[in-house]
Length: 314
Length: 274
Image (cartoon, rainbow over all chains, first blue to last red; front, side, top):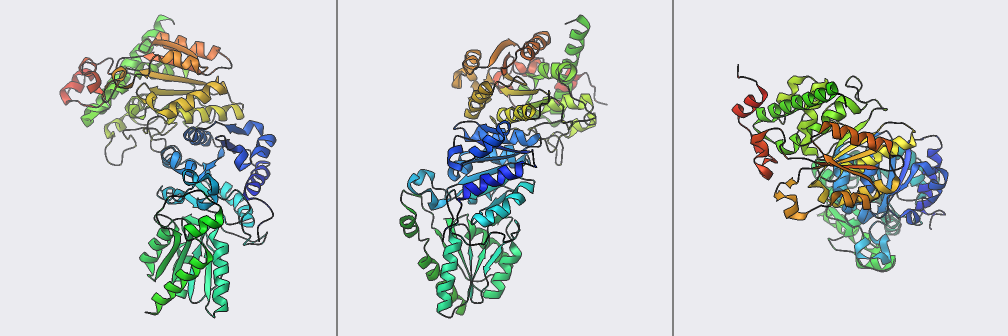
């Protein structure tokens, strides 16, 4: 079942609401205001809204300058351009300079759909998490995004937010509590843990239900903050279930599989399998086609989980 | 400008050149050419025009100075040390392990630096952001941004110039240190950025072009910029790379980063080895 509200509506509503009491919040766009739908912010706070045109590097630099004067800028673009296109500006003017800028990269992975390979970020979180101290977060659904926005605003530091623009599959109930720095246990398990993020969380829940019918207890842990990653929750999952499957709408190289593996290998090695894009470029298509093409389906999660459990029994 | 002020600024420019030459000279190598070309502007800004206070370097109402050509860090460090932002002794630590004075400007290491720079092309966007923040907060501080001419080959500079022109930021003054050289040779031979003033005008900027070593002309141009409302100002400073030190400027483009002997810097600074 989908959320009632689009993710971008929740995003903008939160900014408008928080800006009522926080005059530091500003929005800087690069001609995609109508895609991220921040027009209500512009209407409510015209003097705190800027549109630099199709110039992502300038958007990030202007945001960094605003941040040096105490502002909390939120800037956005499609994930490809919000990450790759202005990587050095984010690295130097924002992160290395320790400026509190929030960068929103929309249409993660196959959510880019018919915009195709040029607009399909399978690497955005991977490259963002190579930047020291960068907070990298992928909110799962409307309830989580609404809960996290005040925490993201309160967090003083460079942040990349990977955001689906349209309606997400509903995973959490409105009012559910989240800690920006802690992974969320969606379903506890005993035999294996699926560590999932973004659009893969609802699929992991479906996979867990299938396993329940087979008498196998498979947990789902939603690691929505990829960096700093919740090591304690991952190590705990490794110890208690002995097998981990990572499900992500992202290239497994450098993505969540890599981030989880870094933790697991260092602390408590267990068999791991990956459901994610296996080092390929994107292409045009609708979500169901793309999920099949890049092996991001519930069946893929089930298959890889069985494989992980089998390896465990060796 | 009265004679006393003129002589004071000229003498300050010479003092700063000596500090910069000593700083880089003690290390033995550094970005001396582009450091020397911008010092006359810094003398006018820091000793006459800019509202800055070494005792309150983070004052939210201060004027901001963004050295986008971050490799001219030693020029800024020389002024900041002379103004008392940090002890003069620190100039001996340039680029030494653990120093507060790295090759390129770092706002988190050096007291008095308003923006980190060094990856060329980024500083003007940041300066635009600072100017916008001043407008939001209805503060009357000014933002000064110093670009290199070679740096202006970076595409982001033109993104920022276009936006600065359209936003009519009369609290922002952009300088281009037009010393006409870059690492690989003469800017005109590599990828000319001229005519700079005509390009800036086409970007809707209030544009002036002056001798960047004439402190009187610099001050007058700044006054003209302040008197121009509803337009962002750009001042092309025609300069000489390595200006003021013959054995530097005579190297041409080779003075971007060059070795300096102890005898050379001691002679220029009038400091004997003791």
